[in-house]
Length: 376
Image (cartoon, rainbow, N blue to C red; front, top):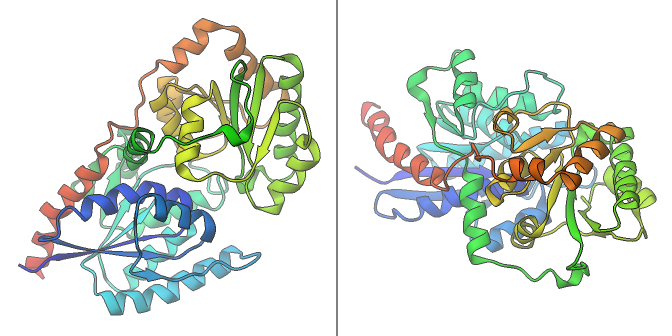
């Protein structure tokens, strides 16, 4: 039998981080697999940083990013441009990841081309179609058109079963973000001296960039940070500020030029991983950070009212604080004041895997896809 042609598609930095270990695993089997990589560049600069870190050279680069791009533009560009990629590469399977508009549109395009699709990180749900927006519908849609569902946890498996996905097409693999994180922390310790951190202070890492937190929510988050820094002279906050003007404007207005608050440019993955490891507490509205930080023993305060990653809440590695200023302050202050509470969260078991998810995914493809191709 000829090689299995596996086309991996991603377009944003979070996707790239989580798909990079899969691409590198596929590359280990050149006699059995032809690995083809397509990037949409939904996020250009931040995507390129990850490609460089993991030494991935795309075979196709759609380069769709435009100033002030909207969901209609991203969706239509990916949907149409992927048609040409499929015609040129003729893949046996297309792999997409998670909940981005790139993933949803690429999955739909592959469905139109009648190419089997594998969904990495399948089955996540909040069961609120507008929260997070548009991610919840993106992942539901991707699951609906995919053939192979690589679910990271028991909960995500159950969500897929409830959605009437055939159980024989669901595979629990763990989350590939743990593969990426453990590899990066081990092999790419970064120099953070440029930030100017005080080694005698506890560092709180903050990330907030989600669309649903634009406006008053992000202002509340900033006000909570101001109050925490005022109350605790032994802490410092580092905030890599997303490039989106909806984030930049309120953050710089409220937190700019404040003592012990370091507003920095978005970080490449290796230094960000190092910063996570050296932080005391992490505040975030990111999905990926909810999965990564517990592997490093860091308590996470989630700046969202719901999460599609409920396992972390159940296992005690994260706490939901929403975007109410007083709630955020109280939850962070509790970790600063109560050593037992801090230890309880930092030592909780991470439900997202052991760093071998990519290996499992590739083994499944090697085992299952030849059966389909032989039948055809």
